[in-house]
Image: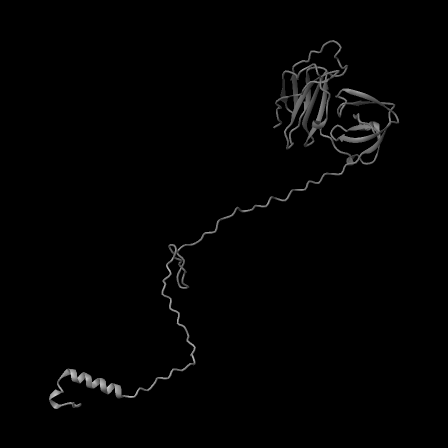
Length: 279
């Protein structure tokens, strides 16, 4: 048997395949050597998951430095604090209580600052009393026993005073407390008529019951009239239901008057009436 290729057999594929296998078996095989030393491998992390938002995102607009705000905040107006005016300090004069000694043998002391008022009690010569007030227009003093609480009014002329009477508290007639009659109402009417500087006042009569006569004037007229350019307090006691009072022009204030009925228990409520003013 002949091994070799004959020129006439080259085109046979079977023999070509056999020939190639034989050549491969004759080629020496060089072994491939593998290193036992492992190189560090840096793992590459690949994120394959895509995070989805859990809710609807809120868009936040940040103003750019060059942009202008689209709205202007107007501050809320607060209430304006107005301080209260500082209190006005009223200086009250410091009045004193003086001591006096009664100089006549006997002196009447009344409920008001004139002998036109009801008699209250009598004073004796040498009585030492506290002078707690005075009425400048009538010149009467409000006095009481030292340490006592039952004052009355006496004429200044009948007392020796230790000190200046101007330092004693002046008393307005409106502040004088008169005893009230529990049995008789105020007089029904009164009227005044002027003739020059003289004013005539007429009022309704007071009809007293038996035993209620005070044995003094049954009427008291308190007037504030113009004298020597100033309004002056002038009380008038009357036995009849009529009296005349001088009232001059030239005062800044208005003249006025009020009338009482008088009985031994006290005074009726006073009655005021219209007063004709001086021209």
